Length: 297
Image 1 (cartoon, rainbow, N blue to C red):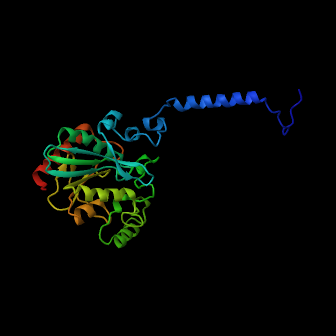
Image 2: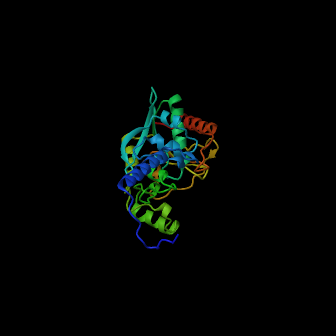
């Protein structure tokens, strides 16, 4: 048999055959899209952007099953991220309220363990509210957390924990970023204070809620920090007080130093591995004990 010329046009197949091939491809593609793939849960499927928060979070966060996340009962707020994701919160209110406490996780998107602890703590608050109105915002930076890979900054590349309106922000934040961090893109404070929808939401929430205490959960330095009036907690679980100073535009600087709202900053030891359940409970118990002894309305 003689070889076919390389550039000779192939005869077109009948129309019926083309239609059959198209239908076959559609059916095969549909089967593949619904077939589970092997690998870690957050690599198995692509979650629709319109799915509820726990579909995303339980697939992404360490030590976070879907049932526990669903039990947290997260409620959508009016807040939105840079990419339009809904910011969720949960209030737990004791029968007799003496204090208002705001708990914030995942200010930095690549500190996933912080969101896990906040969600676990919602369950503890439901069992032991301790004369407190708790308001939890487990994930302030969903765009950074759900990015692949996760990022410290939000979708516009801004470090939300340098974007709060501390005095002389325009001067100090720029100098600090340029000279102290050498223009580290992970710590860019943004073009102006409260330039980001996530930091504006938290700023407005502080004004609405007027908390007696803010607990900001971070990672991975394994210490406890404190800003503001009053005596700090000496320890929470295995984390001991080691005040690291204040930074232009940080939540601790703005809330604790300049707004009179004490800010306890928890730095978990690992950003991608949540503490054991017993450790999270011990931290919760130590926090409540300190609140009873030291925190005054």
